[in-house]
Image (cartoon, rainbow, N blue to C red; front, top):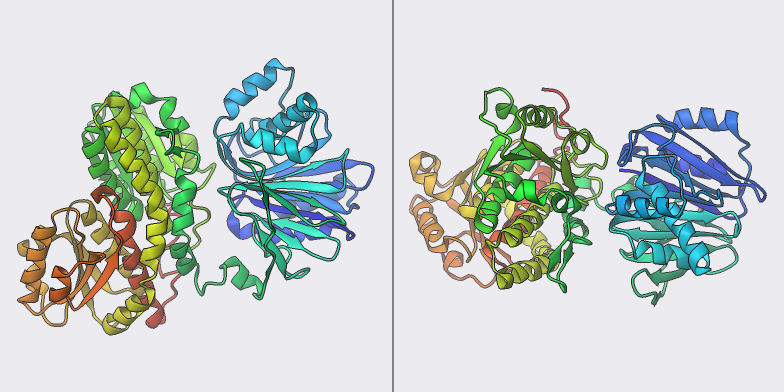
Length: 615
């Protein structure tokens, strides 16, 4: 959840950068820093702690004058949160200074090579590696800063948003983005850089939002020049006029963070597999798996521990791992796992899933597993979180900040990471054919566009929400891969609308829940063409005969369920293992619209917290 702020122009940079960092404090961080250039000297101050601590320290350490400045709030990734590891970072010569959001996954290999060339490092960060790599390119290739940044980024694996300044060419700042947002504010002979528009909205209404894989050279007295990092092709800058206030800017124009985050899922899924899934080459690269492949692939059993929505993602992963990698999987509530006496051995792999990376029960489960000799692997969204530090290895979901308490994009990006992991294991073990492996990659690459298609049902879903918003209970049914989606759909409705809802395997309906069905009971049934379709249709007929109100989630073009259901919501067709990434979308929207219609606090539902750090 790091934050970036930068300024180059005719004003004093310090107050702009400092206030910008304060505007980004909602993102969460453990340290902060600012670098300023006054025309002669490049000055820097940084500290572990809050922006208020930085202000006190900076104003006592250095002069604050200068019309160029960059600032940063950091969540620790590589290296503990302390003064040295805080951003910005200098290059060895002291000429370059950088701020960086994200993670450079191949930093260790780059660092070893740079050490051979005589470079030294003061911090434990991947960011200091990157700024020295850029400096090395400048020296070796005799190129300008912009070209050096491009060459260096083509050698890195991971995700980033960066801003780089060179005091030997003080009229420009170079920025780049892959998987982490970056906005450029365009003023009158001045430019602003930030993680979102909130730090500069009072100075300009004009903004350029870099797309993934783009970089920009920002110079005073000149137009912004944007290029593709991969092939150096020029991109025409698209300047948007901002019409929003600060609060709306933070929500991206959506009424609630939850709705914004639902609609961010196509890009979040793309960002999660970007750089990892190389479809043209038929490869999946995941450093945490690659570096520990023997240990993971030889596991006698995988145990997945998680809570809430992450537990549901784990249930989907159980199907995926067993089907593709042929490894037995158990999925445990972390809160139950830690309080019994589980049988764990050094032949087990324990995968811990958590959006925040701070969930107390999941942390305790990891520690228990490590004590028993198991290999632990973390899947979380927040860089530098406790779980990412506690586990032996892991993989981040690149979902970006999820501010709404009811997780949405965390669920789909967790499934994306776990799918990549299962496919990589299956290929290594030989449990999936090359053709099936390639087909999975191609289908996963298409999922973001199919999610966009699923989101187009919003108007119909609002109609359904209005129809059933006053129902006191709701039942969700699914089979196979979509049973966990039924659980997740019920959880979403409970969390934000406070309507009682239950998710069940469709076949279990006859073993109790069928007694609840009458003409007042809405039943959401996930009935995609892939996976036990005929069996689910039989379940729908049983509901229909008891006058239950049926909302069917179906594959586009379905007619059989349409004839039986009161409403049908279509999703695009895909392979069975990927259907949860699509079928969950209408269920998220349904719970959201019902909660809004009931006047509930969607983003901050009662009694719930974003990160559960106590038992």
